[in-house]
Image 1 (cartoon, rainbow, N blue to C red):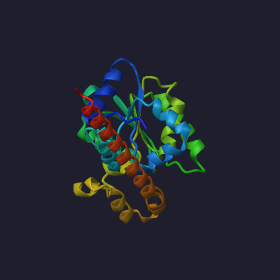
Image 2 (cartoon, one colour; image 1 turned 135 degrees about the vertical axis):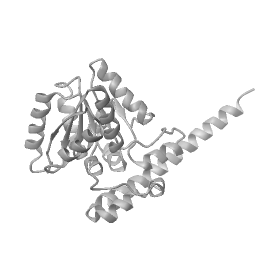
Image 3 (cartoon, rainbow, N blue to C red; image 1 turned 90 degrees about the vertical axis):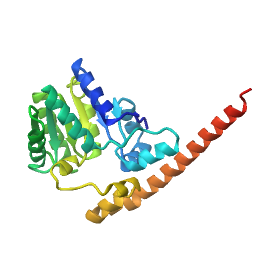
Image 4 (cartoon, rainbow, N blue to C red; image 1 turned 45 degrees about the vertical axis):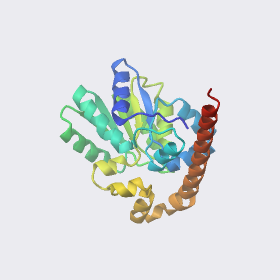
Length: 254
């Protein structure tokens, strides 16, 4: 998976520098569950190859990259991107659109963001995507986005739906940035909170979330833990090979 080793400030600067010359793009924020999907889907792998900005949402990915000796400067969550880009859009007079969530959730998040970012122009489109309504919901969202043509779209949708919208609309909206933010509206609205920093650093945020949302047990226990274990083993092997190569190169110096 391509990962861009950028700080949050650098990621935000890339988005607004691109907008300044009329170019849009896409931002994906992978976590362990997305890594699992990526490994099993050649189509998703091709999507990542054409994504302008990929930052590490999951702390296990940050740790794995350190073990591989290819670290990233920091963890950047979808909520981090949403807050920072909204602030930048307000300062620059840019427009944003928050899409996704149950009825009223996107509007609540937009109201909070506009209160703290004077000058921010924010629209919303609620669409709580379920398997039986996905096609109709995404079609309605597409019509809204094409009609309003915002500078930045924040997709508070399941990952597969994020990718579908980005793939379908990039050609129609070449000057728009699409940012996948998952359930970030909940954090903006205060409906959910992040765990203490030490829990995040220990890569136990999944356990924190599982205690509060036990219905996610399958995602974390059946899918997440095996994927994280494989990621750790692969990272250790890659780090060991890198160290061995460095040692061999040093030994060969005259």
